[in-house]
Length: 339
Image (tube, rainbow, N blue to C red; front, side, top):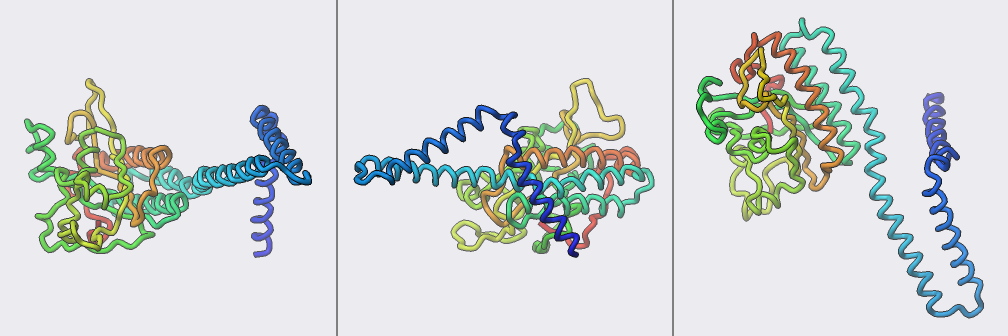
């Protein structure tokens, strides 16, 4: 225990020394010189004003403006870099995702359905732990596989709008770190998460974007910019109600897919749409608002979704006899259905 404490503080000290090392000065000379010049200028002005017996009124005003500007600038900079610092801390949490996939690929040919689902659950748990460090809030993650009423053969000849009426997303696995309240599935499976009833699923399935981000779902719903079939299963009458029935208020999603070139085809299964082979969606949400950023969070999730496609594609090819998950039932890892 004593050694762990020493090692922890020693690591903190080494980080501090690295942050003030002279090597940074040589890498960024002009930035360093500008910073030093600014500090000297402000310090000299402050000393000249305070040492004067009867300082001019405008000297005092300028000094106060300087101090106010410095405080505001420091506050803004702390907000800007605080989240970036959390991304650095979260790297050690995101890193195990690559380890889990690497180790799983070694025995993917002998991996059964239960082991496949548990591997995905472990990945989602690592992902949520990393995002919780980044956002400072509790988050949840799940993978939803796409299903088709009547099978893929029934999609032939239909345009994308009519295909969305037949395709729905079904929960396959969620993380083990968070609580997942049960929905009221009294009408399930008739009340499915159809693409046509979900803004996020529709947008990602069409290929309009690489991710879907909504930082304030209640506001988007109020302005009719967000649609979700979960409103039906969690409860109706959202508008005009003081309570928010969904367990999340912000969400970010990515398609688990591979884009197809015009001359390219998938040799081992049929696809739900000609432009890309989409297996499902990686979904992360939170009960808090305004926690996601498109600049970093979207890229992290996209990288994980791409790795998930490689892993899931290989397992599905080996175990579903060249069928899409929509053609053959895969049991959910969790006994209860959620989200």
